[in-house]
Length: 435
Ligand code: ACO
Image 1 (cartoon, rainbow, N blue to C red):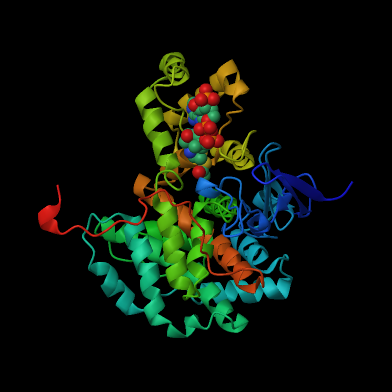
Image 2 (cartoon, helix red, strand yellow):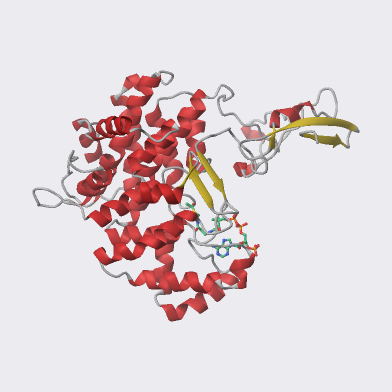
């Protein structure tokens, strides 16, 4: 059986054989090259056929060896390793290394990597002054996006994007400084003094320190919450070609430095359709208010009045594996932080929905956001910090996607085509003659 696709153009009667390409799995990710469609023309002066795909829902924009998702089976793997295993056995910095370099680090590599990240976590004092200029009620995501972009001006050598050594230094800086900037953004919003990084703590513990340290001489993170934070970072580290990764690749394809590209990607994440859904879940659980009101709520969802937030996913058509991990660890977290009545509502809502024909038929299962908001809230994070937490974790994924794009000889500056639907050429009309 030849690996080709035969297309007949009924306008001309001509036939075309287009080669089919494959990735690792022949049944998942087979594609034709969109450029091969250009030979299909209705006449000699025809530009050639384009493929039309708003939102790129069926377009492979790249070949990638970083993250694999099979939405039907509920599989998520980074560099071949299942997320469940990484969540239990690994830590965020090891996962960041894996995502960026393709292999789990040796002892020596991990020590060096961890040392470098810890020792790049301070920010220039002028960054503090820069952040002081924002209004007290500025959204922390706005602060994060602008401040990460501002880092570009502090490290002009980062423009040498083709040099692997220079790139590596920016990886240290970005992965190390994102938590510092995020925590400063939070402290700024509540009028608290900034807390400097503590080199004795691990990545997650130090972030909690910079967020929550009060007057104690030394902040000691609760080990359960420190581990929970680390797992949250692991689960959010990459998710292949989503909106923000696509922005990272698109902005990076014109070869600016990585700071402004990460800022652009974070801007893509900021919106409620991407990084903000867990906030909507919390609102929904509060709206429901009690377990006895769930059946009525579900009834209204089924009539199309509104959607069940935290349910359904564009890619996952079974249980989101990340949601499963969160559900399993939520009890342990609440033992430390105290009971959260919203969890009881969430568990009952999930139980009812998963037994309801409407949700079964449409393959609607809880996604990662269904439980992440409850966990963040229990840990003391305000709702407007939720997308910021997402951005800290995703920095490693964005940088890995960016590096892969730069090293791929087939990649070009992102420049899609369009199907023009506007007016044909017309003559300019002077203002006095316009109706
Ligand atoms: N509640 C009720 N019904 C739903 C839901 C939901 N959460 N999600 C989809 N449906 C229904 C739709 O109404 C539609 O029904 P119909 O066939 O009778 O018209 C059917 O399921 C298919 O819906 P689509 O919109 O085509 O599914 P799509 O894959 O495009 O949507 C999305 C995915 C946007 C995530 C959707 O499920 C949704 O809006 N969920 C709620 C918001 C949410 O939780 N977002 C977080 C996603 S995870 C992340 O971004 C990290």
